[in-house]
Image (tube, rainbow, N blue to C red):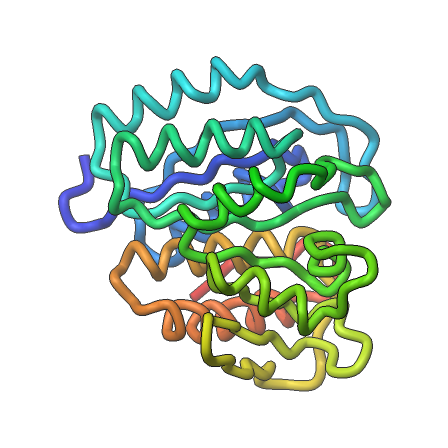
Length: 251
């Protein structure tokens, strides 16, 4: 059993191409020298270019796995990926916090695949707020931040509303005005995280990798800004690793 690495957990889907989901998260955890566990929320049929279908894991099975791992290990941080409903997410988050109140949770708000397959409908604002209050960070892109707010709300107003409860890292991959620049928003401040280089190759699962890197850095006791800044450096290297949709992980 590792004695010098913190334990971290990915609760996310299984992507057979290993570009996203728990396989990508475990690769990222290993590169950050944390020990990664994984709980599968759903088996997918997909490649780096096509999403075909998903078979969700029963919530009771996921909760039993959470109980088993948290009973046996001191898990410092958890990354949550695709989930089928807010009720499913709430049960997971509250189960973790019940067993380990100090564990930090990052939710990568994957609401649909890049091929428009929807994973989650946000139809209960009160439930969303209850969840956000338990989280260390959420990591939406520009498409997802619109879905997290009201349809008639601006992105700025949505961010103000969300950051009352939880910091937000707004990923820049879909930013129409400043591609590749991320913004970390807290209740009263924001930070601009620019890419090192203008060149980058689009990668399947880059959002998963970024949120997993942040989770690992939080487990390594970095503060939120430092964890996000260092993870930005990691994802820049990942995006430049090769010209294909499937990136290579390395320090």
